[in-house]
Image 1 (cartoon, rainbow, N blue to C red):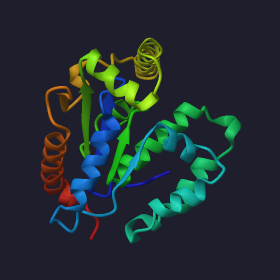
Image 2 (image 1 turned 120 degrees about the vertical axis):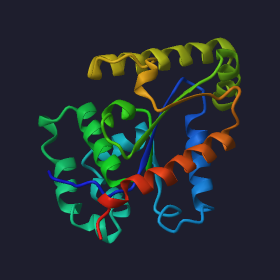
Image 3 (image 1 turned 180 degrees about the horizontal axis):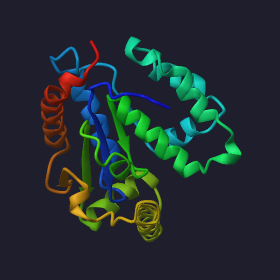
Image 4 (image 1 turned 180 degrees about the vertical axis):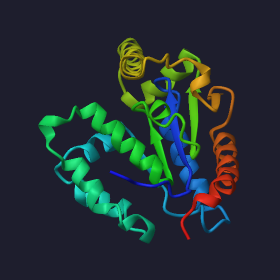
Amino acid sequence: MDIHETGFPCVAISRQSGAGGHFLGREILRQLLENKRADLNSGWEMFDQKLCAMLAQHEGGEALFQSLLNEEYRRGVHQSVYEMLVGRPEQYDMQKKIFEVIRLLALLGKVIIIGRGAVCVTQGMPQTIRIRLIEPEKLRLQHMIEILQKPAKEVLQIMHKQDRDREQMIRTFFNKDINDPLLYDLTWNTGTVDIQEMAAAVIKMLEMRMERLKPKRPA
């Protein structure tokens, strides 16, 4: 399937368990809505592992993609995208299919992708800003207790498992170390940097990235 870059940027976020990846994603979306640039302040979506998995399954795939592929420059790829996603399920490994979806989303641009190896899938794609969020375990534990409403010991076990699973996934599919700083354009400690400040910095980078990508944008 041949889908060309649109010239719109995207954001890929990797994070330690409880470090605030979804909080940052939502804050970026909020600040984008307030941005004065008409070519930047609309049409953005956020995708996490659950949504990417849903898109990679055949049931409902067309309806889910209809809302994404609703601008004129995207319409030409609709049918081929849907055919790729529904495909023949027995011939596709679900995880690799999710990676294909992530790459497609990055090519379309105006998306924030959280997790699922997006920082590795998008290596070499200049439209993508790759971010790693870290935070002291004590602070991450506090956040996760509030979210999960479970005892601290149980939450800590969940966090450790999430981090191990993410590390293993990156190593298995990409032969990379998730903690390698060279995978990322930015690494932030969310225990010391405010989410609003991070989002503002990302949007400034998106504005500059738009200028760099502008010659590739279709007329």
